[in-house]
Image (tube, rainbow, N blue to C red; front, side, top):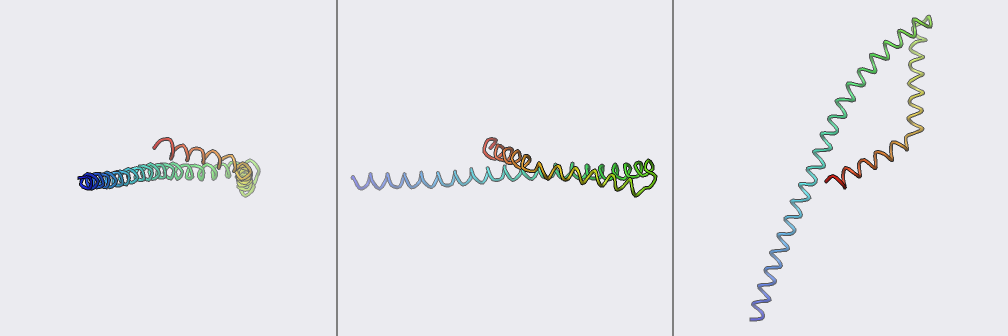
Length: 116
């Protein structure tokens, strides 16, 4: 009798362990899908807005180059001035890159650990 109870308890524990493992596996698959889908949607949004902004900046820069060229007397001087402004902006972004890295890490960790 004792062996029958022990065998029954062992079978029950094994069934519970298998159920736990399967449920945990399904949970992590669902969690991974949620993170993957939110990341993909965010990437698509970022790329679509980014492409639109790049085209806008391209045409605005061309217009600013021609305008500054008319003001300065030569078109190439206008384009050099616009290029110089972009170099300064690039240097400022490079010098403050650690601020962006820390804020992005905080946002990503909050997205992964808090929202899910």
